[in-house]
Image (cartoon, rainbow, N blue to C red; front, side, top):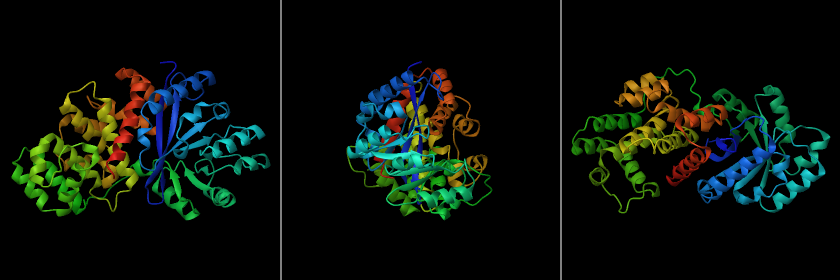
Length: 404
């Protein structure tokens, strides 16, 4: 595994928590934090050629941007030009010296259509020319106090450059950064459950829970249909999802009964799982919904070579439901009291153990760009980097087709 790089990612979102792009981290497996550049360069190139190039950049559907870290040597290399310029933001690391050559190369790349981000740049007279090249500037809010964050923001907030608050880990930090004036954010504040105590589940979640439980008890189709008829909005959503391009069905499904006949119980369960995380659209941040569904798809794809269809459906549910505590704002134990799930699924959700646990752990490690954990779990499951990266990109692409 010495010459491989694993992709990690973090979403970048706007004030409404719509994802505008992902920062992609390429972690070299030999020594992720300080890989020798020659090996790292080889690994990065390999990832771009095999995973991204080979899949036609399919994950960049819609209007998502790819933010990619580059050091000085990569900045001067031609491999960057494998990326589609209009969708690629080159993130110049803080360690890059703002020399005349670096500035000239940034200007050249911008003329080709690439965008430039400066990651937490040094604010010195020497860096002024590089600041002129920036489309985005990231400010690490963990490295300085909020007063200083506001000072830096005010100093750098000169249109058309856009500022991104980086390492936003809590809702409180998200709100404080909004007050300062940030309109773009990076971090996992939405997916980091704080201490939840709320006990009320809103009506639309309640409807889905009710139908989920009817389905899991193997009830008659007419009972399931009656459950949907009690909530017209859910019926509409189910039909909209089933007829979306993500599911590749050959005919349009126009009634719940038709859906039940065509889909069968397992598939219906999957759609109910999706509905569960999208039911509270008004209160659930879009980035949280999308991350949850991406987790489901990635966990399922990682388990494809290990499990039969039935277990893969369970893996999908494990991934999607792994953020239900954050979505419903209540402890996972309490959420699971309300849904009848197989024991193996419950075990993975509560402890990250059991037969599905390692697959969910690997999904979460990719999401956190946790290179050590990714490598450890990939070795345990006997995956190489190409396999993990391919599943990761496919999952992101699939979620984009759902139109959520």
